[in-house]
Length: 476
Image (tube, rainbow, N blue to C red):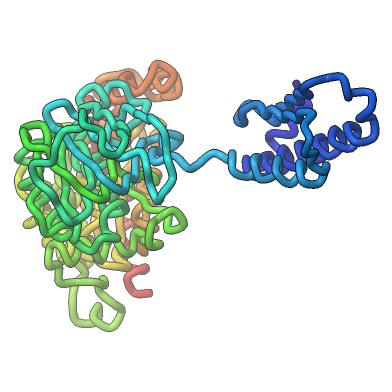
């Protein structure tokens, strides 16, 4: 068993399969050679059954040779059995349920969508290959494994049916463009999750169709559709269908159920249908919102213009307690300062234009920093990281996407005296001395203390060095 495990880890699935095929062929050759040499000894046996197991993924192979007037040569038998093995290779599944965060199906052929029963039916013959009876349960929101998020995501049944099956529902409306089915459940409504789990994956999944695709949405939120209408219209020029309220059977020739997710607010070009990257997504957003600036201020323009600094304001948790003092210090350094708060449910169009007009954006870790997506290339994001051992998490959520979009990224990690937690807990408390102890209790404990209870009062003298560094970067 230990050797088998080491062998499996040393080779890919395809390589393991090739080894299996080679072993099978060798064993068949030995068996058939033995049969030829020792045939007189077996002449009284009516049937020779040889069962060989390659691995758990392949079915048992039965080789039969009967005594008959027409005898086949060992080479003919070997050739026939090799062909059987080659043809028995598993056909690719139409649904991928092996990704860590998202399940999705890519269907081609006769596809019928019944919103009333949350069922997607497709013919079991694709590209001339009989696929057999297959079915999956798919929740089309890329947060697989997060039970809390997936509670509010409708489950769809994806089932195959035989052509000419009279039990399959008849089509009410036929469409001649592909369709993508996805959910606006889970954490949709929070700007970070809107982009991370819906809009970026939707771009990756549907941009390849160049607007010739229709969106079918489950768990829909009308305000969400309205808020991101510019993006949705840039991806599809067809009306969105709310399948939860649809009584008609909609039929398509190509449907993708679920979204292709790579990482939080991120795209892996090697996994994208057309090699898309976050740079492509940034340009796509500029087109969607008609944003004017593609690049931040350059060294030549800095001779006559002030760089614009956006201070992302928060009114509840993790807000700047000395916002006016920070703004005044930045102005004294030569910045034109804009203080603005992103809307929660209102259209993001106005704020997108504000962000795009700026060269530097600064804010405390939180969903508002998702607006970095609207910054022009070479602009600078300054993330203020509160207490709580959040450095890796903060960089992952916003620093990595910023760098993937050719933005410059700076961090400012606050000290104990810059946190309002100092007013609630003694300095020797675990809140300051052992943030890891809260992490061990789960995300809820971290969020309750470090995200929900904490505001920041920045030391403007210390912050000054970070803003000067940003100015230096703009000059280069």
